[in-house]
Image 1: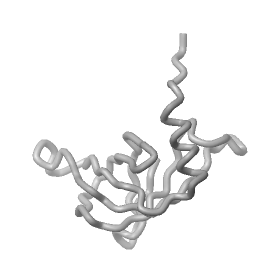
Image 2 (image 1 turned 90 degrees about the horizontal axis):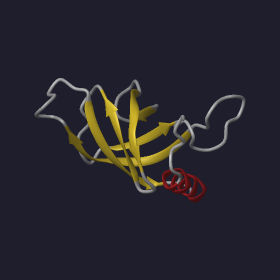
Image 3 (image 1 turned 120 degrees about the vertical axis):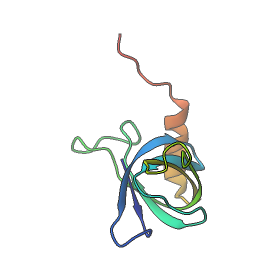
Image 4 (image 1 turned 135 degrees about the horizontal axis):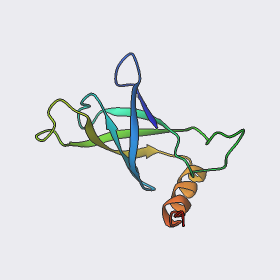
Length: 107
């Protein structure tokens, strides 16, 4: 789950598609121009430690670098790539560990 702040008066809700130590891809219902500064608020199951049965909420300053799927899906949803501009070292380390850990598959 992701919320993009600073784009409109009301935050855009979306879904995290992919994440790395330097940025993330999200899916949102409205187009956001490349170069737009945003605050990404996100939770990802498995990222961080559960507290009271909730995964932690992270907030990171970012910038939209591109939008995909515009030709194939002109009405959305839009795959939007953002890079992290300011990210706490601890959060970046947790993301790196999350990305490097293979997913647990049910038998």
